[in-house]
Image (cartoon, rainbow, N blue to C red; front, side, top):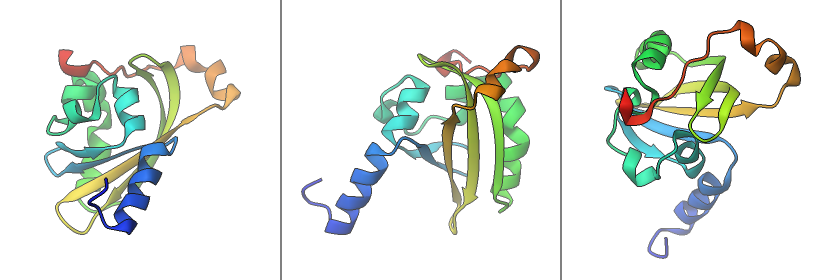
Length: 136
């Protein structure tokens, strides 16, 4: 971090400490960058996630469920939705996802857990996609 320009250092401090999961993926769904919060949610060190595909982290079932959203973002559309998911080491959580296209051939995703108690009361009635890590 010492060799980075001051602006990049500040940005790194922010992305490393914010309580929001943030990633950047290429058009093929490979992780280009992840922040520590996302790495924690995925149950792996960030360095082990870079280069993997979304399906490698989330598993095939969850990938099938989010593929329509991924297709829309790759087409250039900004997409947001909320889902109940099973996160490794964290359990079931409501997560608000927001996908933002970038001006090159990649896109950024940010998300945050929702602590809305009313959401958890209907959790049993909803299907829960699970992240399976590399065991997809």
